[in-house]
Length: 243
Image 1 (cartoon, helix red, strand yellow):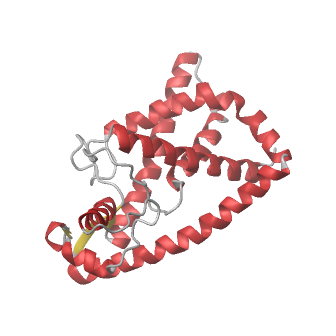
Image 2: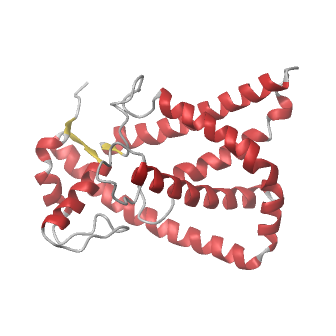
């Protein structure tokens, strides 16, 4: 199995299924969505979350490391492996969150209401969730992953579909980055931090109140400029610390 090709497949699969997981979690379980609306999660426009794609690649690589854990108790080996998976996934989450916060004045998610959170980016509750997802991956997915990847690598039609995914993904990242640059410019000028999901929900509510078309995927597309929406949110935005 060609490792780069396998990781490309895994990134695609993880990004799409992670998006579906977040979509249903926010619709039915998230306390931040009391009205139970369908909300397109994440940084990008399309149906994928790169954080989950990167995470699945990490889980795949870590599962290959199990034979090198020199412990005699197999249960302890599994416990160490799942703990390492949770730490790595939490680290990915923290790097993504702190990068957007420090460089773009943007909160992609907000855990400040969660116990034990660090800067509102990571918290024990979701680190535990990562550990459980790592265990689920290990027992339910990893035993079948090599065979599935082998089949996919020989299926030219699916390979074409993967290439198409990456084409759209690159365009999407460029488009979403332009939005982030506009948000950063406003945040820098006004000394604030913008919550990404709050801004999306504000635009959605604005469209609802004015009987405008609500776009599930193009959440930031509006007849009113992004700067105007940000201005109307001014009093609700987090003030940036000067430390």
